Image (cartoon, rainbow, N blue to C red; front, top):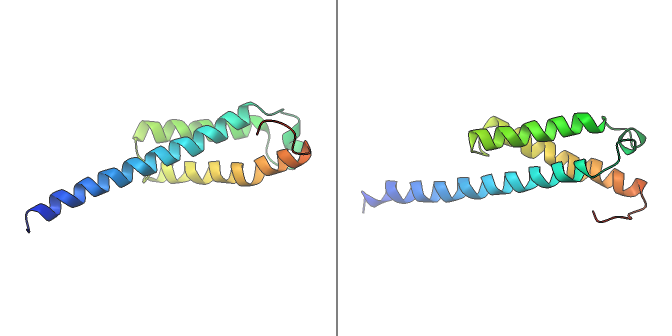
Length: 104
């Protein structure tokens, strides 16, 4: 019984790490694609940083998450935070600016 516990916890940790990595990649990818499809003049209108800066932040965070292949390091957590801020704040402002019209 004592010999199987270390092997089991490594499997559980691997599954949790993969689930977090997939979650991070999906969130960062959705935020990046949404940012790519928006008009650049709408970003200053809602009082946020320009579209190019958001593209750089989201793109670099996605690349760093892919490069380190982990969402549990500092770059993965920063990427999740940046994508969450974009999706929960900027995306809502862009949607309100366009009266909710559009696919997103």
